[in-house]
Image (cartoon, rainbow, N blue to C red; front, side, top):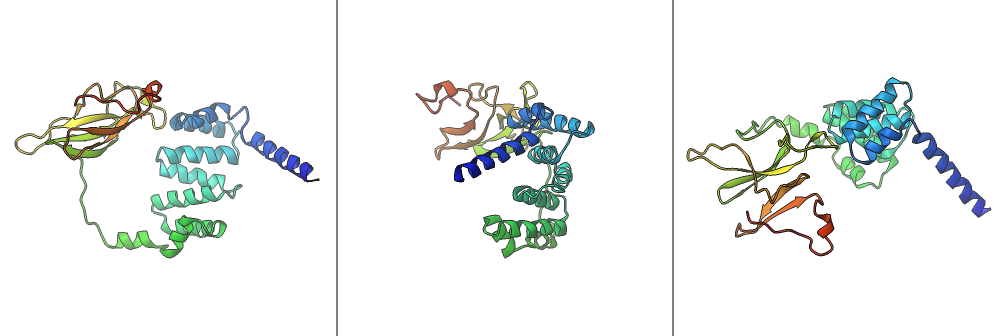
Length: 251
């Protein structure tokens, strides 16, 4: 009897997976599984337009928008998916998108639901301890004015660090690179920004070609003496990993 129940459970789970992922979603699911979320969005939206969408497609569409930081569309499709689903993680992310879009009361309503579903979750515990923290912060008023620096681009620029008078940043501005499937923006490279005598910044230039590859590099740090650079890189040289886990090059 126990074996029969186990077999029945496996069969039911398999049936659920088949109703979720099918021939219609195969192309979109492939993009999603490869973290090509921009392409996944296009293909899941086509299923919606053709009337072939269900809660699975709505959820995948919401997740794709979530991963490319389109909070408005992510909110929309999480709401649609949750009409026929009760997944706690989806409820949590829906709450986050509502909050990102300034809908604090609605966000708290979803967090109340999430804490009921997963009371022992650390996120639920933190929420119960201070559910209205964000409005309290906003009530304090604006404390800073943000503006782009001379060397900023329209793409992602982040991770700035100074070394020997030069600023090192990570940027996705290199249009000669192929686009990264996750966000359809160029792969990240490391750039240097020198200072002029009047304190203004020069144009950002690519760091040493031995540092940048056709894939991602970024998040630079230096040793205390400034002579050794450390940075993360996508496994472009993965065939070398069993023998050597890092490559050294002259800066």
